Amino acid sequence: MMLRVNEAERVLDLPPGFNSVLLRESGDAFAHGLAIAAQAGAGTLISVGRYDLVELGVVLEPSEPLLSARRALFVGMNAIADAIAAYCPPQREVTFTWPDSIFFSEGLLGGLRLGWPKDCAETDVPAWLVLGVMLRVVDLSIESGAMPSTVSLMGEGFEMLHTDAIVGSFARHLLIGFDQWTETGFDSVARAYLARLSKSKPGERRSIDRNGDLLVNAPLDMGAADRVSLLDGLARVAWYDPGLRSPKAA
Image 1 (spheres, helix red, strand yellow):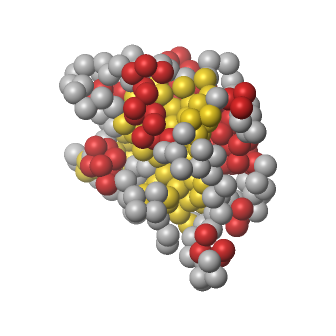
Image 2 (spheres, rainbow, N blue to C red):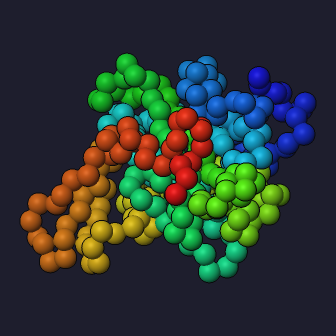
């Protein structure tokens, strides 16, 4: 069930241009975003009132063909990493694994998803995109008495009051990221993402192609780069457990 903002106990501090939609704890922010994207418009931010997760979706309206517009995922990854970093204890690090998994203190914390109209051709500009974000707030294995096996925000020193603050911070960093893309080109987005992306080999050189694929050259290798598909990575959603509707346990 959807709550109107003025009826909810939660009030998100969002920058101008965002419209907040709050769902009860049984809601699914990403699925809801996909369902309403065509009517809701850009800047609609859907947030679920779960104590154990930060779960949200954001509707975007790209100006590029789908082939290149999917690179919005990397803007979202940078934005949530910067939002976490703003509230995390000192000397902790946010890192990524390709393309959409978020790690904190070397444990899986959550990740992003990206959706688009299924009838949109690669060369057409999609009417909308939806970014879905999920972070583990509480490790339920501790509450159940099991041996803890996962990383969570509260388990790593965050306070519960930081969870909604992270949502607002994410929205602000998302705007900054898209502004940088518009003003200086995608390279600045790619550099920030790749700086947090784990490496298979020390010294390897990475870049992101126009279609969002990862290009990797071994050290001193001047030949053709190895290509790692963005679409394949998005389809796997390696960080997500659909049965539990939460990030996977370690």
